[in-house]
Length: 402
Image (cartoon, rainbow, N blue to C red; front, top):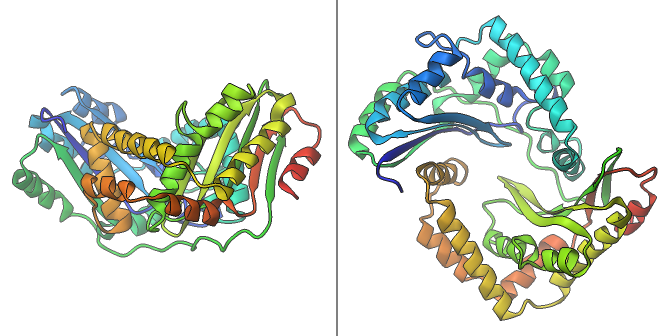
């Protein structure tokens, strides 16, 4: 990683799948509020200027199981960066004014998101993939839940979810490990260490197809087709990543060549996986002309079927391995990416696999393993979400056998 920079990532083992529906979006809400002011830096301007004043960047992100606060600064400003990050996560003021202002910002953000069909179709898909479950809930929550969250809710959530037992600190770049550890020790001592509340386990397998459908006047139809997948602790995960690469990563993938190049159905078509502690999914997104939507769904299903029914040629698997390893190595070039990658492994899996070990695991995936994971994941009831100018969902129901 870059020696001149230091990346610091604070990761909390908490996210949108924690808490009941009434608190939907609470993790994300807190992520916004932490940048509004602390006792020592009472305004968002002072927090931003502390880091930007030395040319650094600071930000946060909320996911289903992890909430991350990170900064990247010139290496000789490491102490400042540690001070600012710990300041915001341990001493945020959460004033009533800030809460109300930020509530408005988040409600606008949610409305904007719902107006972007290529994004919102993902939320619909997660609802049908995880019916009635916190994993199926939007990370930002709903307009209703965000409107009703109180300061007491926020403070209570913080007490249970932002404690030492849930924190992993990850650093990378041009740093002296001993000096960094000493700077951390001083800050970590001040944190509460009570245990948090757990979350609802992922639901059992889906035994029938599902459809989420939204009739909306859009230029393009937006479609996601997918099946239940596997957890990030599963031995098959590298094989599934290669199935994903073969099917829908990049311009030489099967879906791109078949659906875009050969049939001209979609401008954008790609596949992706989502992995959680106790489950996951595999999915394909396509943006298409509404008149081609039904044909596209059938074409995607045919490609998934072919993956289950036919062996992948060795040459195609070799290409997918190289692509996957190259992407991993390129993706870890920045200090922050490396710090996040290491931190996430420690937090979620309790064990860090060096890059070389992951590369070896990818290399070890053979054609039999590909076929096995394709059968295991793709040979399941299909879940579908569609947004587009359609009066009825009949054709889509028929396409997935509903």
